[in-house]
Amino acid sequence: MANCRNRSSLSHAHLAAVVVSAATVLLITRRAAAEAEVIHLNFYMHDVVTGPGATAAEVVNGTGSEPALFGKVVVVDDLLTEGVDRCSPAFGRAQGFYVFAALDAPALLFSMNVVVTTGPYSGSTVAVMGRDDFTRWPVRELPVVGGTGRFRMARGYALVRTAGEHGKNAVLHIHLFVHALLAV
Image 1 (cartoon, rainbow, N blue to C red):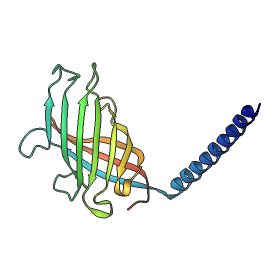
Image 2 (image 1 turned 90 degrees about the vertical axis):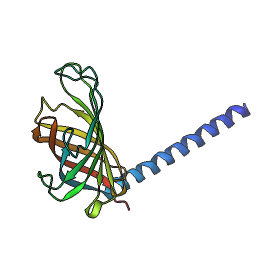
Image 3 (image 1 turned 135 degrees about the vertical axis):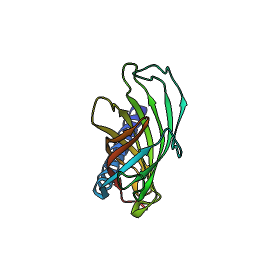
Image 4 (image 1 turned 135 degrees about the horizontal axis):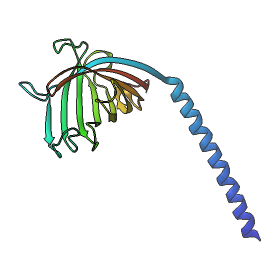
């Protein structure tokens, strides 16, 4: 019988510790949410696959069949600018890849780090990863899945629109809405 009472006491103590831990996590989460700020970044990504100064490389051809190009993989280190013109002031780099990941249409799995190289967020990154169905929707929404520096523990979304195309080369207009902790 004494063993049963001890087990009951341990069980109540364990339950109390769980409740206190949960309350602490809730307070920390509320504090972090209160300290988060919403940052809107607006820039252009210059995806240059062909010609001199290419910043994107097709590393896997995939099936190669139209329209989907299923399995094609392109790695990027694209220039980001403040304006649509490639000669506009630089904002940063988009480093990552995109994969043609649908069998029936050229929809992409898009994964990039937005590396900010100028301004108050210089040295910080935002990680964006999601589906880019660029032939079906004029404006696509991709999730922000993390970040570093000023964008530590970032969440949010990117609105992506194709601003121009020249063959395989494209310019994307990106509005990035980032909820991040005040850091660094």
